Amino acid sequence: MLSRCLLAIAVAVLLLTGGNTVRAAEIESSIARGGRLYDNWYKEKKLDRPDKPHAAYPADGKYPKQSWRCKECHGWDYKGKDGAAAKTDHLVPIKGITGAIGKDPAAIAAIFRDKTHGYGPDQLNDKDVQDLALFVTKGQMDTAKFIDPASGKPKGNAAKGEVYYNTLCAGCHGLDGKKVSTGVPLGQAADNPWDMLHKAFNGLPAEAMPALRSLDPSIASDTVAYTQSLPK
Ligand code: HEC
Ligand code: HEC
Image (cartoon, rainbow, N blue to C red):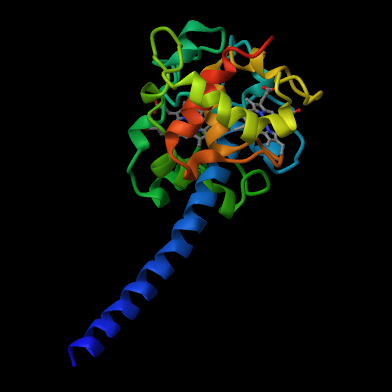
């Protein structure tokens, strides 16, 4: 009797955790995709960049051509005007999105169609909006854990990062970070560690680059720390 009871419990636990694993996997890849859409949705979707600057982008902003990308208004560290962008010419007087962490994804999804944002279904369809809302509510990393906000110095362990880089990234980027001829050397990209961290966690729009977000966060963090020493 007892053993049958235990068996029933074991089966129930297996079914439950098995089911959860599938759902967790779907959610995790939606979040990563949301992160890539946040980076550059038209590149991820292989669409043309909209011609006109985004209506909410300030007229005196320095990067009107990038103005439809979420990151251009809300930053690579998700802190908008109060974050790392404040020290660069990408600064615009727009707040960050960290206040949306933990909110209901459906409520956040509605924001992308509001008057301020105005993304049409031909730009972001319902699945895109859903993935973005999952990223915003559940996927934002606290970048201050990985990069010192004041100095911009990554906090990871660069020696460990070298091992991760050489095995996870060098196949495409080369040991010196210069093998992908279409992009800048990674040693140069490392000048913006927040951008690098976002890409390491979520992957690169429309490229086969891995998204490390389901691994222990120290792996992306250590890798980003190591890229600081790659040649420019
Ligand atoms: C051209 C600039 C611009 C772009 C691009 C932009 N936003 Fe916004 N966003 C704003 C402004 C302005 C607000 C309103 C801020 C306020 O209420 O003061 C806002 C508010 C938000 C908020 C609510 C933040 C809060 O706590 O109230 C979220 C979430 C958000 N945006 C996410 C996104 C995402 C995701 C994208 C990309 C699909 C995006 N935004 C693209 C300008 C932009
Ligand atoms: C499957 C191949 C592949 C792997 C593996 C890969 N990448 Fe990439 N990555 C690319 C490609 C292709 C590009 C450049 C695309 C372009 O032209 O913009 C790129 C671009 C980047 C960029 C943007 C550089 C720029 O131009 O701004 C960063 C940052 C980056 N990779 C980091 C990494 C890190 C960190 C790893 C390891 C965790 C990694 N990549 C692994 C293919 C890869």
